[in-house]
Length: 223
Length: 223
Image 1: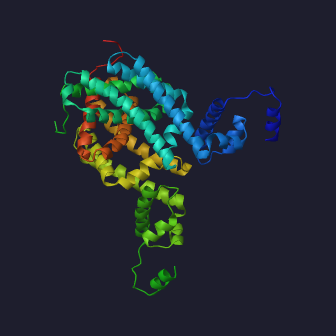
Image 2: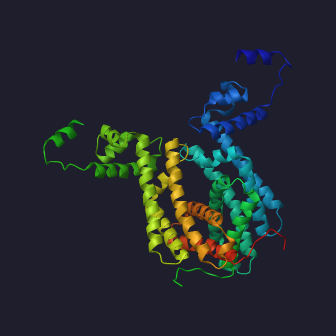
Image 3: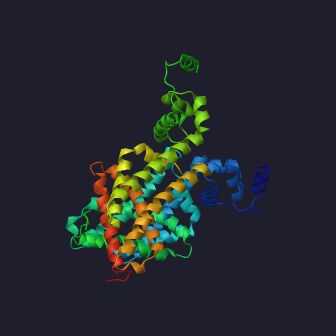
């Protein structure tokens, strides 16, 4: 504290970092620490030390340990949704190409940002209501993106009128759940590229949906 | 305490409940309380009171709050796996009929045992390593069941030789993840029966896999 105060007192010796930039630095460190130690074991002391900032400053900027975790969660969720959305928009005109591009960006994000994924996926339940609702918001944002693409796919298909937006929402839930679970499979198969995982999933789900759109129905009757 | 001691002292007034039966009663209550309050907010006092047993007895039987949660987790996971396995075995000869029966039992279990599902699915991350590893064990047991059925389906199909047990494991991860996620969809659509959810999922995944088995491959080329 004293050292910081003194150093910052001498003008120009230490660059004044804008608040927003400083916050991002703290969040960068916090994501790593929360991913490594888990929410309860993580300490604000360690985060402050690794970020090179005093603990009271961390509290000043981000309010509390919970506030810090919420900031991590929101930023990483925004990044994940932006990665999906950006890739899906750039993916081409047909819904399945956009879905493919979005899923591919999702698996690439998870492979590159293990810590973000651990914070988003593994540690969010069983914490406070504020955290649970931030997670639910993030999941709804992803679900809406995916359901929109599936709905476009249904609308553009010839048999489209048979299926409605409830079906699109169902397929989106199945796809998002499958993608979440496949991140575990992917970490157990380090030789598999995110793109390979995406292609397998597209083949399983999109091809299956195509057949359903054509009117094929599976019913449990013995052959 | 005193009342309990005195009552038990007068022979025959209160039936002596065997330890195992008493443990199951405590676990019944604990599942409800953990589901309602969450792990951290749940109190052993409340569990003891609702189970009609003294707090020291709860500790004697189940060691600690963590031990109590682990006992809940293990029992509910065993029940869920048994429900899937029993239905799958009774489901008929063809792998897709067994898979259908197993999935149907899964969705019925989740619909009937909301508290079990909340304990198993929502509250297990971000707790101790012992709890995380109990959850991982349960998930592996479910995954092995599903992968086995998928593998049987691949082996019995004509194009079976193209796909291997890595593919079966991939499909199992996708299916289990989709099923987990669809439990949320199901609670948002109370009019949908577990059987209806099962049929939609079978249509999406199994029909899709059938086409892949026949050699159809989706690749992201513009039309």
